[in-house]
Image 1 (cartoon, one colour):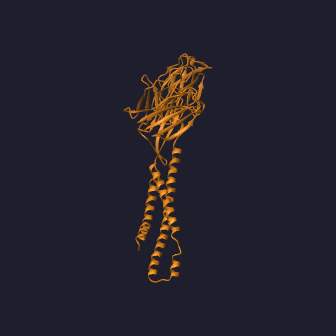
Image 2 (cartoon, rainbow, N blue to C red):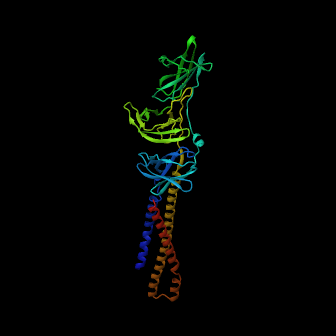
Image 3 (cartoon, one colour):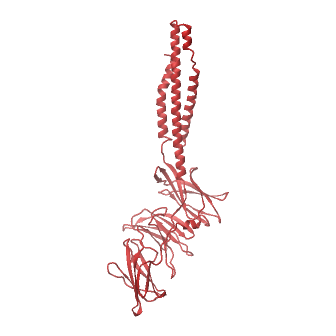
Length: 444
């Protein structure tokens, strides 16, 4: 056997091993499912506001599992109009959240929001959220409760802050009236479910009284009895609105005090009015020694307008236990109410990043398939070439053995050039497929 044939056969043996190795690297490397980084941005209305607090979440996601990227710098930018770009570099917290606030020019119009990680776009979208569209997701509770009433006096009851939460002390507002007129000086008593009663209180000039109340269960009813001069009386009986799992928020001189009935690490808060969101943050909570947790948000709500502190255990404020507690004291006859608006998602970079990831995987697998096809073609060409070279070796032996010219002519009529061309084309295809796979691997 000639040295050329030995080299050809060595290459033939090596090709299947090489093909398996390249396919394995392609499938487990650029063709494998890998985490991809994406950003989501939440905010309130973008139209008609001069300040836009934004909630940015950066995650690494694979399949249906995602993890926040902690302590990572990303660039958040807003394009206002054709030529104005607002930019901020923010660092995510331990959960992958960041809370930048942008000052917007008046009549900013539609905005282009983008988040970049090291120059790579991980989320971008054009946003234009009106106040009415934002308010369409609002939810709130408040006002006098529905229930049973009897007597000559009308008794109306409402939680002082719109709703109650376990186990935080609060008050019930009681309104006593007769023929639509407030009754001052009426004695109001709260009857407990166990048969006892609280110390009575007296209504003021507006017919109002406040009774202290501590909700310890989620399903509660109350009976309130009012008596006035000349034996006039009336009572109210009805269920109280209690929000299970709600966190508490109260205005103090130092800021807004947050309290959880159970141990939690963080509370998500937002200060808002009916015109939009003023600020938001993630506040660290500390154990209170009683099985709960407390924290302080050092912020002062505006005094010139009604505002609410929305507090939740979920960063998007979309949990059923989310409550927007009033940060104002209403003047009679008004009542305080709750007001909360879940986060509105302005952009979600995950779908686009998933398509990029999916496209990379498919390209890697296509190129791996092209490599296998090229390797198969090259193997066929090498096998055919080896066969022709073996024939030529045989001719030399036959010629040395004295074979006739006609017999030799029949054996030498087939040319080697078609197989050489096939080998060359297969080698080029093999090289391009391998180069493409290397480029994909570099871009991972």
